[in-house]
Image 1 (cartoon, helix red, strand yellow):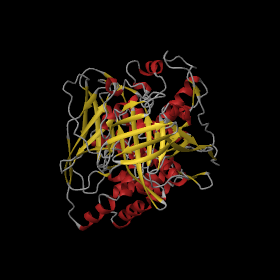
Image 2 (cartoon, one colour):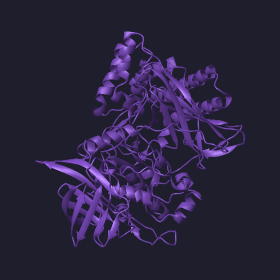
Image 3 (spheres, one colour):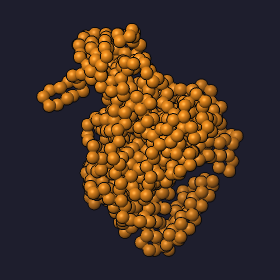
Image 4 (cartoon, helix red, strand yellow):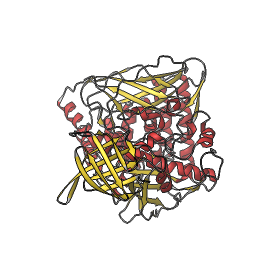
Length: 629
């Protein structure tokens, strides 16, 4: 067997022509060394080489200009010579693995990290041999070596406290705690085993919003714990799935959104038997069909990416997740749509320059009752949003944090419940600010339904007005900073890395407190104050900053009083304000806030079905706050 990694000065060569699931390719990454520094030059892949024993040749696809695309390799025992792009290299055999990644794992006290699972414990496909798989073994079968340092344990010192993590806390924890974390591409990754996520998710690859992405993932023990074979099997899939995102693997139904786009597998990607599919969305047969047929492996296309993807497309900290550039073609309406579902994007008449752009997504039935899933918000990636800018360029909105939802709440849309709604802040994401200049934008959404149907909305016009006064200009500057965009996405953060953004929002409140956009700064500051904030110290101890109900009430009361933000966000703000009042010890005021919420939306004339939901939310919030008190 000659497949594996060969290493020489300035070249790492991967030969993949025999052995376990050979992809019939040769690829490599080229570097240059100057003094004590090494820099990346480019990559190549030979997709259809001619192989004759240890002699391999073919034409390469290169990421950079070369005098010739011819690639030849001659392998004898544990050595090789190669001619790549007109230059010759002497190489020695380095590993049977094509790539190696170092994983640093920390777990919060009370969680139990996954170890391994015997794939023969439960019925599966007849052609898949029973074996014991942990995360390292699963990736080893793909030709990737995963080396794990001795795991760290993070004590809490706060028994009985709410240890639900949010996105802001996760990203802050990574930047503070990942001992190998750095602003440079490297085969290094941090994995946190936490208790639970505020959204109830099983896992998340949360390192998205800077120039060095895909370096951190988390799994949430409370959502996947258990000693049964089914629970252990689900834990294995969750761990491998989240680490797959760090290698820049997309979900099975999203590969057409990559750069370059990849063909979707069977049934629009939902028929892929892959670690990267969702078990509940597998077609045909859903979860039971998936496990009956899944051989515990990546698809061939995914193996090609893992083994032979160009260096910057795979290594952690290099190209952004999903695509090297966000530009896409606008979504097109399907030629034939028998889904029975209608999708709308709605926005207010116009936005001030610098104002956070929030749109409302509405999914409704076109007539007959329909069953689908509840994941309408774009952060779950069952809904995508395309933004055509005034220049005519169309970009894909990519949320700062995207969540893996291994469970889908079924929703029935009918006469009693004709529609569901979500509010989405799309002003800022992984590519920065999307509405950076005044003008007219066209926004269109695509929702992937439970049966795989792709529902495309009509285009929605979003107008961004030109600033008029000096204050308009200055406030827009303060609102459009990169850190400010992150704070709007996260709804606030204590992270020192976002200090400049918090300082800018403080200036908006202190110096321009009567400006209409100050409401958004107050909202972010008030929501962040209302919650506690977790921090892992350098001594690996978890501490929580207590909520500040007084500050929260001061800021959120102004937001509720003005009631100029979108309805769904206003609903959330008022419920959080009620919780702050209850934490301050005034349950009467908390209940009054809920009564005001009902009255506010009644005065707005919202439709009866939505009004019923709001009244129910108000009563449930009152009951919950009373029980806590």
